[in-house]
Length: 141
Image (tube, rainbow, N blue to C red):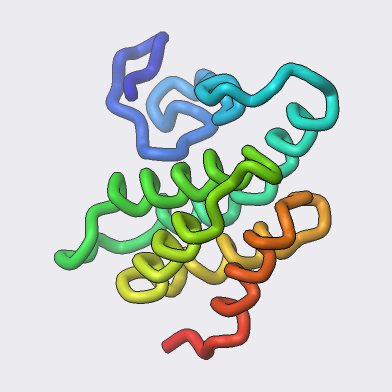
């Protein structure tokens, strides 16, 4: 993604352009998906987006790692986010698989992701909460 003002390549989850300071506008996940129109589902999507900001920040400040690229981590968290906003229609197995990926290659990203999904404000389904709780109980090495 590039800055609309100065055309500089932006870091993955930048809120402001590091060159010119212009605010970066990124569409929310619930605009990319078929989230039903309505205050409840859109509010849930906004809460999940806000709660996952620390995970995106960890990715942004993370040192380069030969095992995994930052865009791959960003994409994984974004997929988790996209699945979580589906509410009762979310697939807990997919989220579990993506969390396993994070646990193996980026436990520093796993911790804020799990914390966000377990937050009561996230309003995730019981199946997702159960899948995420398995990761919160395991020690991170």
